[in-house]
Length: 111
Ligand SMILES: [Zn+2]
Ligand SMILES: [Zn+2]
Image (cartoon, rainbow, N blue to C red):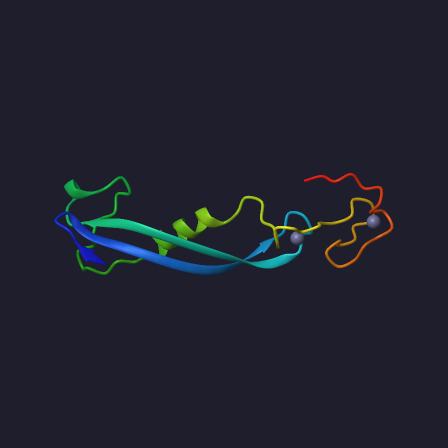
């Protein structure tokens, strides 16, 4: 936190791990999230930034809604358990990260 003429500037650096489901192989895995932000908590309404944050009268800032919002932006739209996930066989559903099934020579690759 640092003090500015308009308010308190909060600089955050947060990491989290969430459970995500891989879009290719449907495995549940731990997705690491990382976010950094700068937000001004204004002393007065006139000093507010676009984010509309104001310093509460009791001086206690609850960061959880803000952190939640920022971390949510980091959640991938198409989560992958790993960049080179091979996914499931479209014929038999075998997890191709773990095994190679008989269909693999004839499967057309799709994203
Ligand atoms: Zn996967
Ligand atoms: Zn197969």
